[in-house]
Image 1 (cartoon, rainbow, N blue to C red):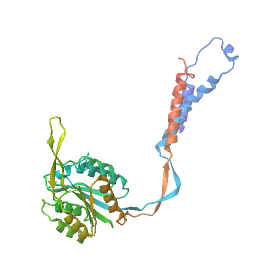
Image 2 (cartoon, one colour):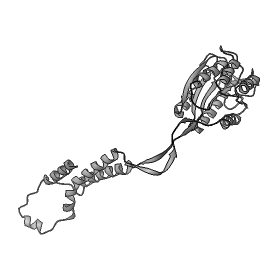
Image 3 (tube, one colour):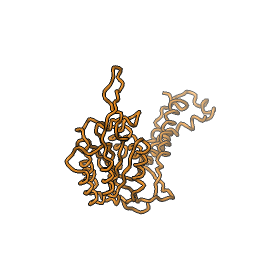
Image 4 (cartoon, rainbow, N blue to C red):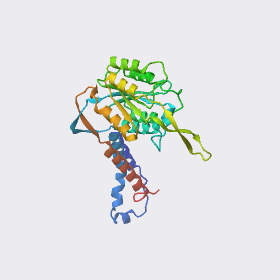
Length: 318
């Protein structure tokens, strides 16, 4: 601050002086407003710098209210079927996978403190996203999912085993697997019931959701000459008894989704039946409000005022 004030004083003393042969004539006219304002210009810059420094220090004020620092949540791993049968059009105008992705995206958006992971499967199972609270990244991963990327098939047992592996080391009190599929197990190395036994030993319930109506459903068979999708009634085998057994053995629930609303309702019922658990312990903590905005605005305002006055009303010649 002393350095800035010294600079302002020197700036004021170093201005050019206009020589005039009859100075007493000018003196008799008195001093105008401009004469009094001109010495203040350097100080505008000084105060602008001071306000900017205060803004960079990020001043904060404490709110009178306090918030609970304990965060409650559930560890959820969703196992999503990406087999080609998910292209069936019984959810027209969209197919099963498109609707499942839309509902899952809404489900993720509705969560606050639940850690969610994603396992995808067809003929094999893979972890697409580990347990995370970064819902933005998770929804982007979900958006990019496609069928016909993995080896075709429906490896339900492998998908459940992969999901359980993601939850095995979790310390959350509530851990759950949500299986979304539209078919019967016909691939993989692990039996679905063996995976259910593992889930039971780990005390992890599996909630199963069967997507689709079953029986003969419209299935895409290519396109016609005009580029329109050609649909043909195709038999897609389902096994609701297997999904019911998995849910019963692990303490979960089985749901049947034949339209977007019933799929959304099934996911909501999963959450309603779970006990909340604490992922992070903590007590009460105060809220703090950022106050740097006003100082930053003041700094820009003073700097702009100095530049404006120097270029217009208080312009000095030469």
